[in-house]
Length: 356
Image (cartoon, rainbow, N blue to C red; front, top):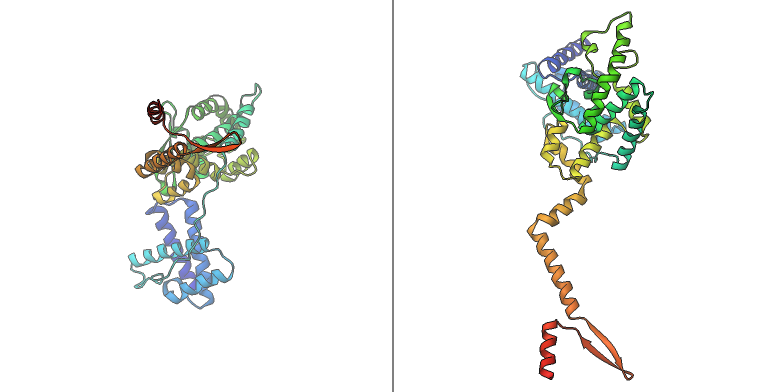
């Protein structure tokens, strides 16, 4: 009976996440997995989700720690439980939130890993050589367009695979992207990315689309309008895009190209607010991690614009000048060393005049 109650609750919660919260299917699956893990833990303690107490949640976190689950994963599971029990409270299915006063496991903030600019340039140049070959296939044009779009727009892999042809506005130099929570944002594109997409739409995609029409089972209307198609004329999967990026650079990944886009923008002077909007971050604190990867740029900006930094440089220059003025030289005259001090030209000229 308890298992059936848990399954019914989880089913209702999944519907709430999809319909009312508008979360993506993959996010809903991740939440469902975390909640089922907690439900199984409660079954071992002869409990169910609606009767869970604060002690159960604390014991669950301790259980994760003893089984070597890292603190970031444990914090994510606790966040999932908080959202679930908040929903139960709002729906008046419980009267007390068992996650109250439960501290989230402390986790080190992991800096995003990115590729160096020469590494990205090498990847894109190799893809361009294959696409510009006289006998280039439609897949080579598609692969180059995907890599350019991942780096130029900083898109997530799920955003790439979900793009439709109607999302492009190449004449205006932008693309409409649907990110987490089905939130839409407009991402500007550079000239190279626009050119590669135009070439793919003109010479690559029509060939792949014709393959889908020859298949016995015609694709759905949504699949037919997908921007990037496979050799079978079907929409690409996230795993396939991940494999494509790995083929270009074994140390790369789609998300690492996204981090590289943001890091290189910050290094070249982009402000955090612009990068936040472009990447689709809900909180600017998520974007702030890229400042740690561009400390050289920050130091240069600080030296250039901060009044104290300018004053420090001026004082250092003045100190250097005083050291030069006060420097001395020992000159040997007839076996005896004499000390001569260098002074400004004006003072030296005045001294010579007095001696005359």
